[in-house]
Image (cartoon, rainbow, N blue to C red; front, side, top):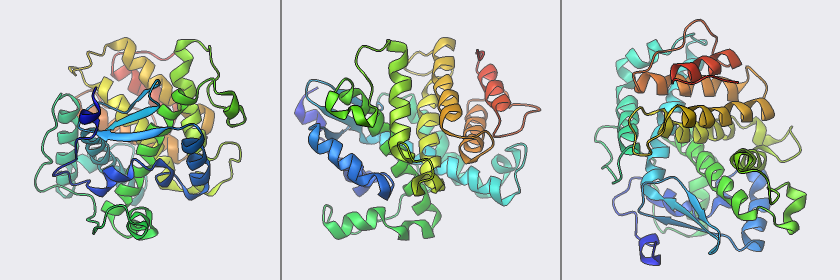
Length: 328
């Protein structure tokens, strides 16, 4: 990949300044973690670059780059929009045991239309135009890059409207993905040992799990579990949305990545392991995982789970079985 490819602009994207913001991941995380992330970026000489590719974020170890495709970021926002709409519906309706009421309500048609667009774009090697008559991120005035402008992009005013809450959740999801890639770049760095970054020489099958753990720890509080970040519902929802969005690529029966049952199980097992390590069964993270995965089953025309309560390990195990795998 050439530098010119990495520098292509996000012309016409409704995300606009939010794509630019992803090059400053210290602003995407909860306020308590910004100093930590800024320190790591500066001392490890890590740069984040956006480019036109549709793939999920990845790192280039030699050049200390993390590449983030802005068409992929669009899909993250769309996934987050559907997930948050479902989660807020679930809370309003006093915890239903099925999402049938959500998907059948005409008021949710624009959300589901945007979600289906994201799923279609997930399986495309080229960017698909944002669909008409669907939700969009909030509009932010220029100038991009000013301190006042950046504060508006991450400020509390976002939370007053649904699209703003989606944007906050999107920010946390994007941050988690970037932190995951940072863990790979920081692996084996002895100067970072106090932050429990991945050690060098660990088995390959533990690398992804270790990066997941580190990204989550930096998002919700590395050692102090009673942090404001952990209590921030949109932070927790963003972490779960990131993992479920990435899992969506393997939930698709016929996607361009050519995934099979083994990949299904491994990807979803990462989510289950993270939940069991960081969160308590039945809390926001577990319930969100159940809801988001149930929506994925619906969108992929896969069987819905039956007879298990949302937010439980039994529900996650049923999801895995419905995509053709088993949980060990």
